[in-house]
Image (cartoon, rainbow, N blue to C red; front, side):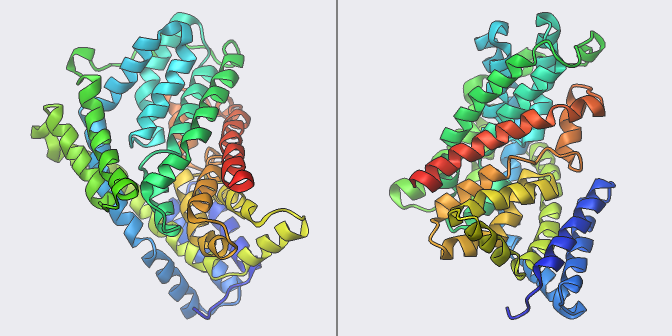
Length: 421
């Protein structure tokens, strides 16, 4: 496309979108207005700006279809109690003496198997509050443990982030997932270390905090049956890198969900499970349309050249553009998903042309997108704070620690895929 927008216009449009989202404008509308303003301020005509926005949204269609299909697996895990079964089993096996590690590990595994990070935290939170009350651990410590574990699981999960990045960098989904394994486990232990330091700091847990209606453990499926759906999905996705048999995530993820529902003996409720999953994924799909609109403008701007020149002028390697793009875009959108997708759409071609491999680019962008995804203008900040009834000012105090966990994931990823790779 011959239309090109100035870096000033792209950045200004992004700032306008951030401000609008921060003042509670629905994100898709904030991104729409930001994209429109960015194109016009960047020197494009109204017709050209609309064209860029439409093309950007069209580029998201493949990812959106796969994400909607993934809703079946997520819906099955949540609605059958499979997610809660996984969390409770892990926490019970490890015990309250290592409660913070158990909470981090449980949230990591839930997110890894395909549950959204905010839903993983919400699922584990009622158990975490009971443990925290009994062991006299602060809300601050348990929330950091869950968030850090969720961030670790996020980079190795068949979620919207990895699906979109595998598309953007033309890399198998399983490869993008495996690229996050080592950074994730390093982050898990860093999370435990940081959470331990906060055990007696911050807000305590009261009896009222734990007085919520909870599902009886007798109603929950067993751990092995709960894991069956995600395992089937991962096995199907693994056929491509291992045997060269390609089964698209659009088939593998819902098939895993249906299989899990059957094995757990909950197939009669599959319609409700799928409907619930679709309701969760629909929000993401709409958000992706918004990110596509602004990505269309940024992709056709000089912003990529400006960032590369900036990195070159500092004498830094070009591959640092990948994590830097993830960090900037996740901070702008306050979302790992939106940050990873915008950064992937905008900078993938630049990174690939500069010699960065597809797997390295996807891994480092994804890692960078975990650094600032918890900012207050995003839903994750409020959903996680609400899960433990934490006040706004207390939730703000966690941001530096969450950022450290994200930076850990990013640094380890850069070392593996940039410095060594």
